[in-house]
Length: 146
Image (cartoon, rainbow, N blue to C red; front, top):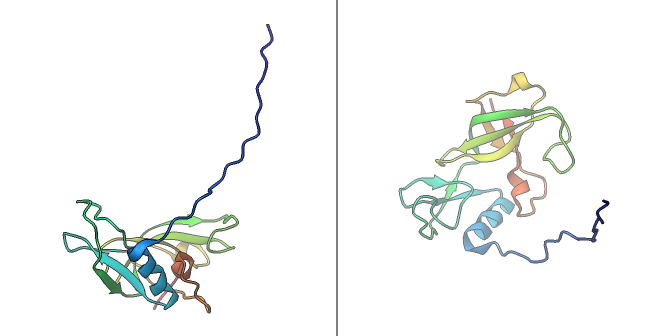
C-alpha cells in the first residue's frame, strides 16, 4: 500500500526586530568608541559582555563598568577551516578572554598562524577595526601582546 507524501513550501523567517535596550546598547556604543563595558552583578562580579539581568538572582542590572581591552586567554579551540561569516578567513583560535577588570570570559578569535601559537594564559588585546560600527564584531578579533 503506497502512502501519499505531503509537501508544502515553508519560508524560515526572522520577521521582527529586537532593540538592544540600555545595557546592551551602551555596550555596543562603547565598542564603536573603542571601549569595552561590563555590568556589575549583585555579587560584585563584572560580567562582560554585559547582560540585562543578573545570571544568579535575575535582578535587573544597570551599573556599567569600563574594563580594559586587554586580557588573558582562559580557554581556546583551534579552527583550522573557517567558514564564511566567521571573524577571520584563515585558520585562527576561538578563545574565551577574561578582560582585565572583568570576572567572566568573552568569546572572540585570536589571529595566530598555528595552533602552537595559542595557549591558556596568553595575553591578548582587542584588534579594533579602522572604522568601528558599534557591533560585537568591533571586538571579535584579538591579537597576542608581548
